[in-house]
Length: 376
Image (cartoon, rainbow, N blue to C red; front, side, top):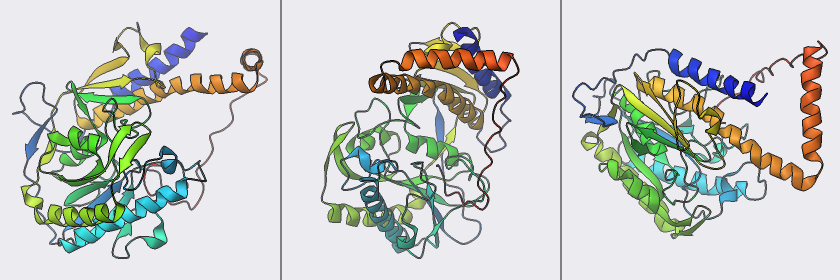
């Protein structure tokens, strides 16, 4: 039965990785040196006469923040404080963008705390800016590219990549690392590669000192270090008022220096690698024909950035299956008989299905009238 579950996961990966749609954006890089994940290009020219900036925020790299409970929506005691950190940092960046000459600023939620509402406190958002939203779910990193006409991207409250030793360092979700053509990347670089397909640069970022080191790959970026990470769950914070003024000043400078920034165009094809460390795991794929698994990692070749992204996110769905081991530990701690009850229910579900006594519940329809602001 474990083998059947394993092959179900593998089938998902093979279908998604092999069947992704061919990308239409211009991400060809015939002059890319062998093995590099990207080449650099001048920003695309402004064609509508308005300087439009997208602010994408995360929630782990905020000023004043040293407690990881502040970025978790389900922690009702500490999450409101995280929202205070967030609105302060984002508004400081928005002020700087307008001071530097931006005409339009929109904000998108790149955190995904689980809240049905945006992590930003909407009624305190700088009134000159607008929260980007859609009536249907969307991927904040990729789904706006090609459908919106931003001239630059600013990222706020970001974090270092898995293994960097930063505060809450990870890539995409817990225990996940991403490599493109062998180079480990941060989520900031992931955003830059996504927008680089249409010639739009990331010009500003903020986060901890470890992310600052990670982004040596983007020397043009105006970066503000808001704290020094001392572990994955602790940090030494800088004076908030000073940091907020620096956020404003550097965002202003980023706009003024926009055309000295660089767009990161993805190389093709891409060798995409997903690295899984606890609590994630890709061990279920070891030994499966057609899967390039080694030492906790799976690698595949993609013909475009879009294919690489789709394949990586599909693999992540397998990797986060490792989270269930932690749930098992919790259940056994709560009830020493939980393993026996779990086994009995597994067999009952199998017997009921085979006997025609059970059918899956229909998928839950999305709520009518809900607005989506980014990752949820």
